Length: 293
Picture 1: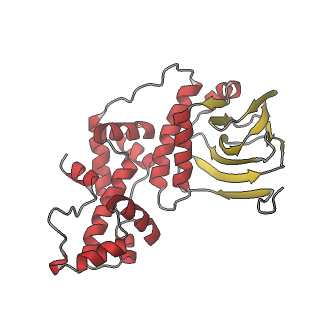
Picture 2: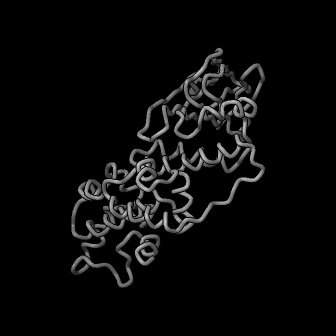
Picture 3: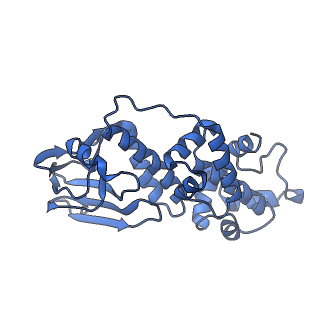
């Protein structure tokens, strides 16, 4: 085994996302799990190598393009299926997204070959490692849960999103009211009497952007105005609802193309702090679309 590749490397935490009991990222080269059970659903993707495991006395495997869903209370084990071991990312989920009535279907078909599902699970993990992006993680996880339920209910064709412009508008209004403090998807679902996954689909179908993307564009729009007033990026991050200055910088650069500090400096060097003609001081094209809808 190469000296620079440890036999075991793990990272685990519990995020502030409803339904997620634990996030577990690990690399194992030789370690094999004995038979054991979890009291939560195990949603597993393998990024390098492969894992073989036994579930309900049947052998299964996890090639790179597979999403594995192991149900709670059913014994399973796990071991590397390739010489170099494996690197995996796992979400342990409670019954918020998957009911116990789906356990039997998951035992029969725990490995799902679905490239879209695989990509969406990876997007959930990417959001979970970024503090402050819990709404994005919650939104993406809602769609993951919906697709898992459709697989377990044996639908041959995954259904097309159902349009609901009234619900989309109501969610938009709620987000507009809570730009700084934010609102979780589960809380929004309770307030609007809608399932979180339906909220995401209705909003995305109506406006062409996910709820978390809309909220971030609104926050960046506010940040731009405060920066042009001369406030520091650290102050602006707090005033506009970002987790910290790094969180602001990441989203600001993605939507505006420069860091908040450079944007602030460029605004101050012009008379009156105004930018060139035609500059959009909102949250970019997405913000202009929403304020005019």
